[in-house]
Image (tube, rainbow, N blue to C red):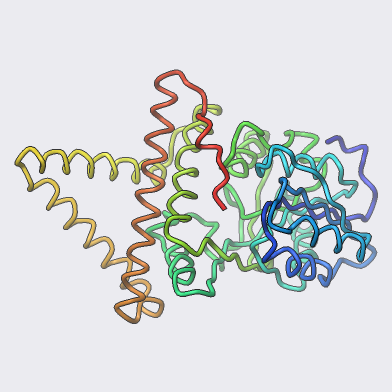
Amino acid sequence: MGAEQATPRLLSVIAPCRNEAGYIVDFCRNVAEMLLPEGWSLEVLIADGQSDDGTRELLRQWCISDVRFRWVENPRRIVSTGLNRCIEASRGEVIVRLDIHSQYADDYLLQCVQVLQATGADNVGGAWRAEGASRMQKAVASAFQSPWVAGGARSRDIGFDGEVDTVYLGCWPRATFAKVGGFDEDLVRNQDDEHNLRIRRAGGRIWQSPAIRSTYYPRGKLSQVFRQYSQYGYWKPFVIRKHGQPAALRHLVPAGFVIALLASALAAVLGAGWPLVLLLDAYIVLLAVALIGMREQANSVGKALRIVAVIGAYHIGYGWGSICGWRDILLGRGPQAKWGALTR
């Protein structure tokens, strides 16, 4: 991943991919039509994690029709290994990570390079903005933007312009990887947060700009949301342990809620139901406050109920995953295999 590979004025787009037959062609077309800074050219590297839904054939056809696109094998199938394989195969002096499930403004790459040059930051990106197509996916997107799910994270604030701890996706000068290394391949989730933490600890800066615009399309089923966020919750303690960093309150609250829920449920079984009633009443108040803040999205009983279910899946999934992660750390065990299973 050394800087000696850099080819002046070449921009490298990298993207991990697995079983994206419904999205891959639209993604490639979106990237192929993007504006570039004057004097720059483009290469696109997509790391396929052994897709078995027809994605590979679609990707093969696209790479033949547009020689700027290349296919990289990712036999371990996880995001961090796919990103690293792409970085190793890339030649650009600037590297931009994209996600197959997002749609990008025509000037996305142009703005990435301009913000990188204007700020001198080590990583730049835009806000993490979600939208949905189906009724449940719209509920997931609405909850995703809520501060009761995001915990006040700047990455969900679409108007914020300034320095941040972490950013959605990312755009780096190649020198950043020469300085801090690639993504941690022991992490199935949270690899971007961990990489950004290394950048900041090395004295680097991360910048978020509203000029860098994209739209993310989240999971469309409640079970998928639960599994996804239980993985985020599970892997976060391993990042905290690796760097000896204090856990942010927003990372601890879901686990505390799940522990309180389990303890109060046990108390109810043993004949003391008031702790469970008190906890559920408090949570209902929290959900009501969240819905007031999403009046436009929760403007019917059905929409409100779907959003409530999604927020619950976020909180309980992340909390349960965190508990399991801390349990494995306290027992002196490494990450368990089942938490490395793909969830899309």
